[in-house]
Length: 166
Image 1 (cartoon, rainbow, N blue to C red):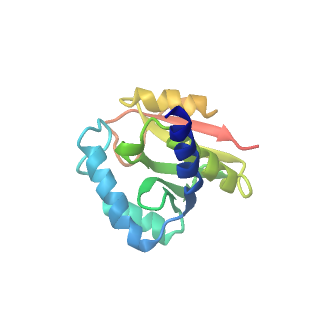
Image 2 (image 1 turned 60 degrees about the vertical axis):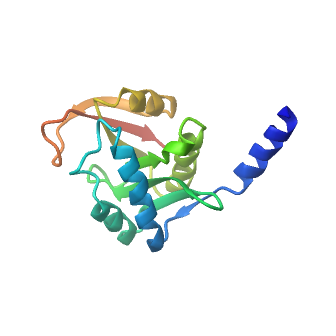
Image 3 (image 1 turned 30 degrees about the vertical axis):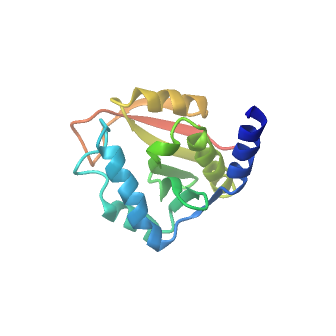
């Protein structure tokens, strides 16, 4: 049984693709967002909205990790206002039924491989009420540069993280 399970997982992972999202997939991404919002301490009725994903799609910055039947996760890329050689990541999500299986790491590895061709740094903001995210981003090589105020939710404390791409 163990060998069969292992072979099945290998085959399952081979069917996975990381690519720019298609417009028709925005609704499915947002249905995953709604599911995540039920238990999230960070995402609420105000953020993120479907309009945020539409905007990222329109700007060419909405990416998905998919298998033959599902969207496993997604991430949005935006042009940073910090420096010319920096790009930002936002609205990273993994479908709850695929969480804790290495797909989040896969999304980051894939997006970093794409972005390092054009940019030297990646930035992201993390709400302090999301301690698991800090640990994950630290494992991925991001450095916490401390708290920053953000224009979208001034009452929350966000940490600014950055990574140099190599």
